[in-house]
Image (cartoon, rainbow, N blue to C red; front, side, top):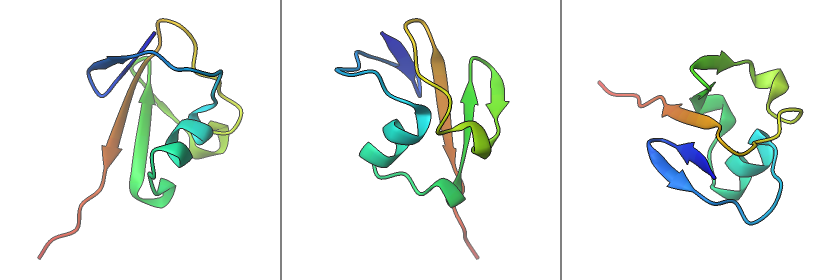
Amino acid sequence: MVTINGNQTILSTDLTVAEYLEQNNYQTNRIVVELNEEILPKYLYSETRLKDGDSMEIVTFVGGG
């Protein structure tokens, strides 16, 4: 079980951060991922596997005027 944006989630398969983001339609050029209270560099999204007990926050940038 992982916590994503404050919600506990059971992942049905072993996923990388990049795979999770893709499956949930996030645009990686418009977000920042914090994994276990540290900013995860974008180049590590495809290498970092989500594991039991992880906490991930996905922050989306919103433009306005």
